[in-house]
Image (cartoon, rainbow, N blue to C red; front, top):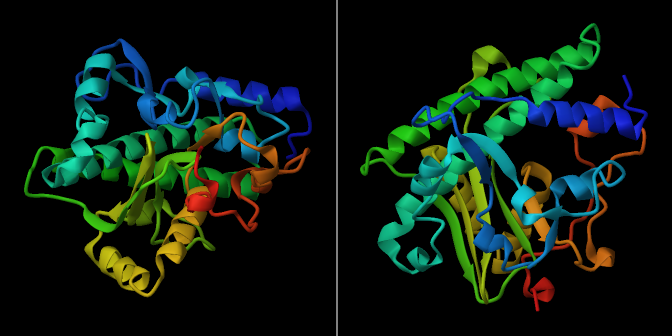
Length: 308
């Protein structure tokens, strides 16, 4: 099936996003769920004071509006206001990053939010797929893949929650870098690392490893984190990163952001000549909507692209 009309795509997406993944707060069962944001709003304000272009605007340029306001940037609905404030209170305070004793808590909170947003995005994808013809094998395969991902990520959410309750359990930091300039891009998310991407992810094989990334531009500096809950994966990536220069490390993470994460943001007025063309065709097939075109992405983490 092809999505051949702009209106059809928007209708399907709007219906999917409006569907509720939970009827009450995931943590306390309060029924007053609010809009949580992938990236803290104070971080987004460091790259723009008005409006943003998100991953969806870049990758579906013919389907999405030209910009989004801060209240719509990276939104998901799974928590009440009180739990949202409490669950992320350490990492959403820029003063806490200078204290090394806060690092483990910061990573746990970033991972928890990443996993919640990923679950919300998977739910939206499954709702969108439900509108397609399920007699097609490609649709069935996609539904099976996202269903397996949903259950695998549910396990990850529970694991992270348990870590938040236990000071002895911590994530394994692969890479951290504090840049002395503000990058033009903010990004945050998790992605599954260890599974056969050619044969797909099966429901019975839902134990997978996840990599978390956060690029948090503050005023005149940027914090970059890459970490995992998998010890062997951490060792593997650390060994590989030790062979790279600082520039190569930033380039690697920059590429992961564009090809693996669902949420990254620029100022809406960022020079369009610099923006990557990761666009899907005007009449996309399901495959082209689910897969990003591989291109050479400028390294927006380098000082060359720093925000002025």
